[in-house]
Length: 319
Image (tube, rainbow, N blue to C red; front, side):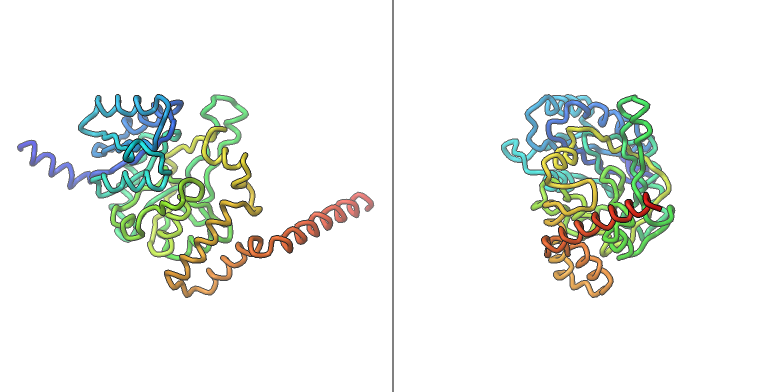
């Protein structure tokens, strides 16, 4: 068997997976993320390292790894080493990738060794599924502290695991807060599914960029929700989400925030553009938009709820 014959056989048995790792000043954790890709039990992958304008040592780290693994890794950046945001960076990676399947990994997160092998097997067994994902672990215990180990928690799936879920079931569950969006590092997608929804919306540079993409996909495609959890979403104070929460751009609870308001207004326009006819979806979306449309009434209702709660507490104490 020639090398060409062997390569074709390998590709048929183990389709190429393109792992896209975007990073911006990620020198603190990027080595660990890279090591988790190199440790994959699945043999046929490529890694595209997309630099979103880093000014720290992560650029040199990425380039050094590409030099050591030129057959498996590539370094990409925007023209002029610009910072263009998460969506544009992921789109760049997708455009330059060659795999039948696509996975994402941010530079502060990690895969478990079986991640790609397990999920490729599922997509091959589930031809209807555009994507597979499980309950990404929100990973506090990377610090090694016992108090942080107790804080680890998986994302809420909202459906029984190992289920093929057809649209728009998950969109409804997400709007009702009965499920969480997939973790970006927890998914494996068919390339054509990404192309069919137009990739990531580059107007969303950071917060909610993942939700915009997943809502587009879940509105039109069946996905397989698995029981496995093969990725770790690192929780640390310098992450994009934590930084946005401290600034007030977003919140960790359900109360209104500027970022979520922008996302919900986008979703309303998208529903209209896609001519969504499901009245339940529209009702759920309008319920979520109500605090943004009527902020004064929302504040009054929140105040009334707090007053009722205090009165109930006082009555309980007097019993």
